Image 1 (cartoon, one colour):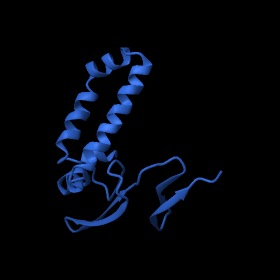
Image 2: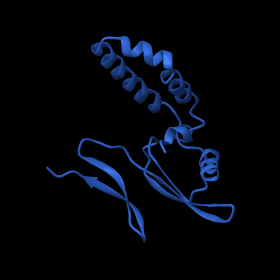
Image 3: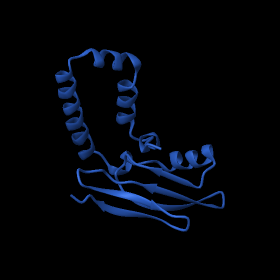
Length: 131
């Protein structure tokens, strides 16, 4: 899943996401000239970085309640998500069952934190693209 649905305490982000994804907002935005849209996107990214820099990281992260609710709703043993950009493998016990949460890292031009899964193991690895 995309990890933003798990960040219940990040009220500012949740409000902005709801507003930006509203069909009227999208309809209006797509009618703007491409150059304007690019400028707006750049400003939104800058604003996002500023917003994140002045917030408690715990409030920007996935909440325990959201993680547990997702495990229960989908009846799965593994959740793999991004968005929070804090790579980790978390082993949880939920109703006596072992659950695994993998958080993927940010993607950069030539590097990323990736998840390798085999029939017997799973692990987060650093990936570097080769030219």
